[in-house]
Length: 336
Image (cartoon, rainbow, N blue to C red; front, top):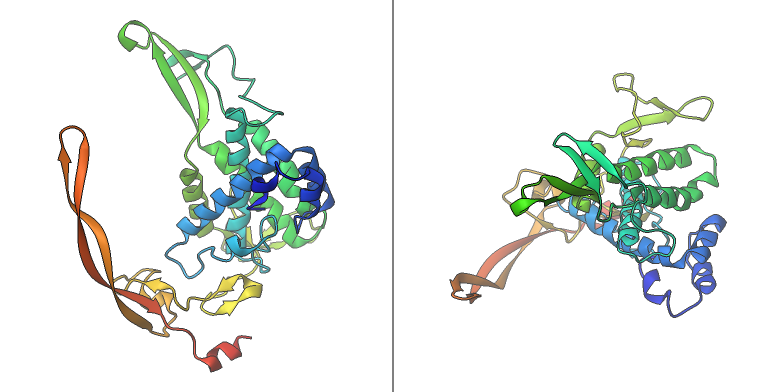
């Protein structure tokens, strides 16, 4: 899926869509019917993977498995962990974001700016006229729901119910950060008249929000009639529509375990001075670390020259880089 957009113009949509692994029939139909939107879905996939890896860059699990998988949203993790909950939410959000952006930029035949933002309205500053191009978030959410959820609706089990819930959390997270942007009119921009439009915030805000939701994710079990969730621990509150939910505890991600979506931490860079999740003690799971002295060339002593250039010198900087040791063979075999 990540490379889909590169080939969509060169080959027929049917050929492309029939050869993307992991699509269910309904998704293939969408793919064939809306090839321009599928290009945006591919862009959205790259965006959410980058965001996922940013959010977990200092953790043992850092989303590194996801960009190596060629299915639509990856096999991700076979376990129903809180990491899986985050991935489904952020991937769903990425599709909404990319499609909505493409609508506003005039790249899609089936949608454009939000047609409902017309006439006059008001906010805490007073009245304004709708103008410009409001992001058509409703179209983005509608298509993402139909396309992404199609895979989960094909099977009626607990994991599908979990995925559908987290998909919705992701879609709504993008909508949560719509902001009103305005342009002032009047004498010297006095704002006697305003033209405003709704715009999505940077995707980082959605990523930060879903990362907080990951931290507060609620472990659940499926209720007896199979229509919803019950909290796994009676001391937890019942999840709302904005909470991420998961079924199984996460593995420690110390060792490679493809079934759990773990590449292990062997070779990962760690911070010797940190006491957080990126520390060598935590990141390396107590196995120790190797230290390599590396010489880097960086720009330094930068000065501004009138007008208008910044000139820098090149400085050599020698630093110690610490990387986690690989597990001993006996330790690795115990896990396989």
